[in-house]
Length: 192
Image (cartoon, rainbow, N blue to C red; front, side, top):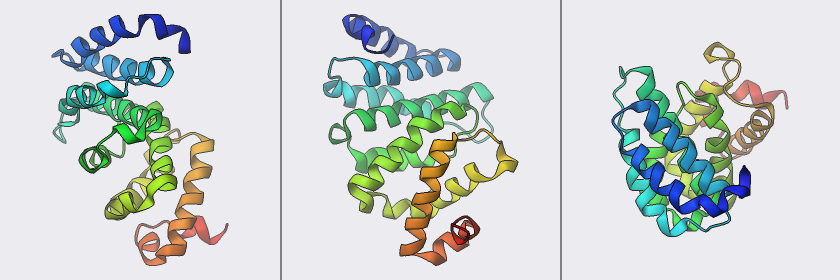
């Protein structure tokens, strides 16, 4: 539907809030995904809702390491939604509070489709205000190594994301080659 969803923005948003608060992880996941798409495609500026949306998404990030796949999937959906919020209006996001939770949820475990908005959001932040991500570089390099390792799944990221990710790793290598090497990513930038 893309922007054709605009006339239904408010009733859908109310429905998605209810879904985010549901007890079923599958319902939460679908609501998180739908919320992200609504924010991305509606012509209505939903940034005044961001704090409420982030509060509704926050419980989906609290997942035990041995949680069922459905809970992990809901967290992946929430990460994708947050990525879409960041992309739509970064200034409306309290990044100092959101980034620790967002980055801790990575790498995604089940729903690799959500890597697209997650990585687009990370690239956007690196371009707009890279120092915000400096405290997380070691963690992010581990995430990058994970998603680029074919042993963890061939389809973790799309080719266009992979190309941009390798360019980002090369830029990080120029700043701190020892960190890139420690993450096992030096071979990616040595040949390019």
